[in-house]
Image 1 (cartoon, rainbow, N blue to C red):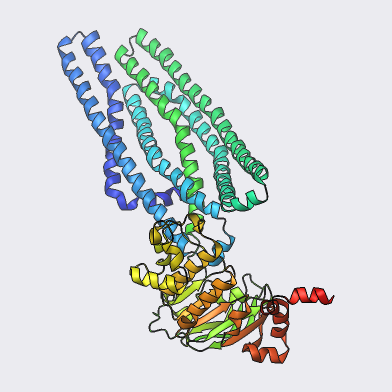
Image 2: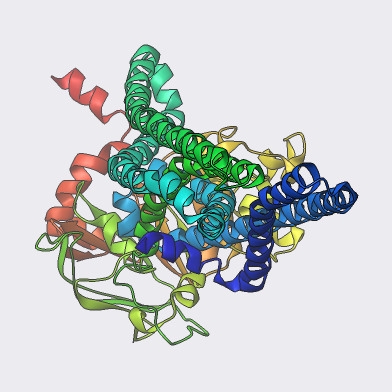
Length: 587
């Protein structure tokens, strides 16, 4: 009930529509309860009492109430759907907005498929509860209350006999809810796992085909689907067991009415019209009894889905990243790492005792062995993660004091894993600066050496590049990403191995364009090519998360230290292409 109440809090803003909707539903229920009484009057007064002149009036009342009932039903169904759609619209947008603001650390651990499932399947389950569940819950609750009250008012003895089944019905519903609740939660969890399996397969479909693992993936998905089937069948089995029990109890009540009511009619203790009305009431109450299990089922589905949705909403946005209060204006690009330490998990330091100061306009190359912390250190600049100890300063101010949006607007990033949206080339380049003119977009593309290629496409800059840029090569995607970063014209630029997927000729053209652009901005480069590193104003060498050397290329080579070893192992062959062959010849 706590989860259901919380779900209803999202519908609170539509309270006026809800009041009108409840009025319509209660009015419909009142008409349903009144109809058997009209039948009683027609039978007792017109047919038994032979007051035939009253029949047209009663018939007219039946027709009028039928028309009113139809109008009320239309209004109630429309309002119910309107409220449910608006409520779910708000909830879905709130959830998506929240997911966008969750920290990198959250997304590092969360399964994308689970997030998709909760944003789609779970939200739709909640919508079903607000639409179908609300109608059935309100009408059936008031219908049962109305029938019980009118029945006891009409003949308390027959009502007592016929309603003796109610405690057994309540017990059945209670036990049904206890058993079916956990089953529905497990079904929703399995839907999330199956969605995750689909999402991972589609994202890695090229790998699947490259290794001819289609049969393996089909088998793996079949296992997930089979598990979902088994859990759903288990829930249906419980439902199939309790639904006939509820129907049986309702039928017992009907038999009791005919038996005891017939006895009372024979002994002149009750009129035939009253017996017919009681019969109608038992028939009417069968529907709420039958649907009660369905309402409980929908509520259980909604509660399970609501808990999964609220689990995300209750996760604090940008976990432990409190937004600052300062706006970063007129950024000159001075960056300093002061006594910095960082760990993704408590007690596990990835970086420690890092002290680096970068002047505005400097180009800094960060090198080191795999796992030394190169990508981690640049991810701290835009506050994708927060430092564990120490501070990162931009223009002499701790970046935690800046608003996140303000800070990130001044940082251009080309990540190692290039991601492009399935929109046009123009939209991808202008993603960070949507108000840019077409000329500015073209200039950024020219600077990234991608303009000529774009002009060769069928629709030029309006060409759709496919999901994740599937229609582009790796080098082309990276050049589009570089153009996207350059269009922002940020004072701080981060290139995380941004030229690793381009050939030597393309890299040379990109570097030539970047040299001019880097003159007025602070640039951090995580590079795997010596041509990039040589042009750096400062090279920072990392080992096991610590800065072991800092200097220029020539200075560090002359020291014969860590950089010299890395250069000899990783970079020297780039300068002497035939070195390996010569070595083999000597051997």
